[in-house]
Image (cartoon, rainbow, N blue to C red; front, side):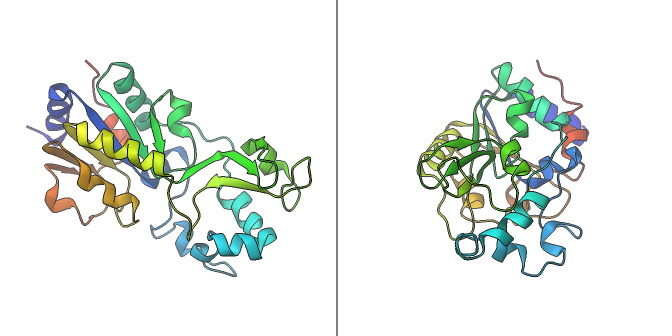
Length: 240
């Protein structure tokens, strides 16, 4: 039996699937990842991206934060790929109960997924730090220099920066979904970012599928590892 046939069998037999994904899910849509050879963390900037994307940097160097953020984190014209679409199909069919994502691009929702637990927030939600008024990503992208609210307050993306905590309600929902699942599909993540990666320890089922082009610390725990692009693999899965 091929790897794809095995994955199809696992999905057919599963009653409750959870998908846990990272940046690699969106690379086939043209969104760059962070840790690959040509990822954001290996590009040359005045400051390391890890520093720029921190709470303290945002507070102390807001203009420089937004110079990087608007160029490298706000993407226009990107569309969901075959992986996003298949996950939405699996949810609509009652097979998949939740998508847990480290991504902030909103492509899962754009593909039609309803239960999306965004561990690191979303570029599509932005709030005035003074009055809490909401602004979308389009407003942020078009803003000159630092995006300001009508009230004059500085707008902050609802994105979890370094030094900030993950949302407690999102974590609780992810733990519950993982505990109740019988199949966990992990895709496009190095499983090196904590505390997000630590969540998979709460998986209550027996089958773990890893779809990732590189080796991860959890390969030894996986029931099945596939080293192919996620969209290519999931795009061939039949929903039945």
